[in-house]
Length: 239
Image 1 (cartoon, helix red, strand yellow):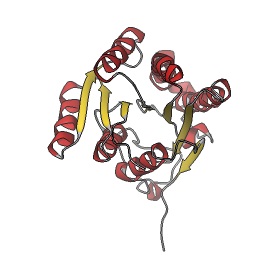
Image 2: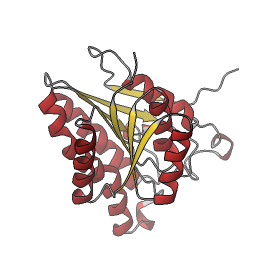
Image 3: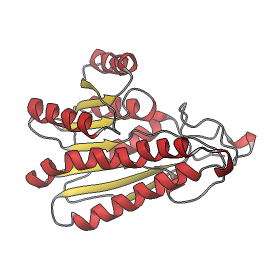
């Protein structure tokens, strides 16, 4: 199997998990479109990919703005004529108890993590359905499966992602578009930050970006007759 010749959009590609996925996909011959808001950081990812012989097109866009996202998708279709894979990765985290979190803070997490996912999916889905082929991969979280204190916004956003994806699987059954949710535990990026519910000695037990990117690559690179619906991925401490 190979991603050679495939066109993928990866949101939140400026750094962290998104940048890692972009690098992994490009190394397998995929033509990557990286969407992000940080021009300097996104360009650095593009330069790194291209220095290794890969292809990555940067597009500056805010996933919470439908106009910007629709314009980005139009640019991709105009340049490449198709979109094979969408990786809904862009996300933020804010860990505060409900009593300490403002409504504006709660709304911001929901806007990026859930509304942004809907906006990007809504923009890309028509061209996939029209072709009868496509794959939408949601980078969710184990917070979409379980609940931890201090995650009143983050937990809700990721549970919402899980349910949105599950709904899409039913709505798109038989229409050629795969839907996958990947639920990692802690990943060593700046978004992780201090998790108050974890003992201090456990906070370093996280997946690396590269490890998670390999999992996403595996999911994206299955035969056309195989789909992985939902996958949990955690750090494993060997003996």
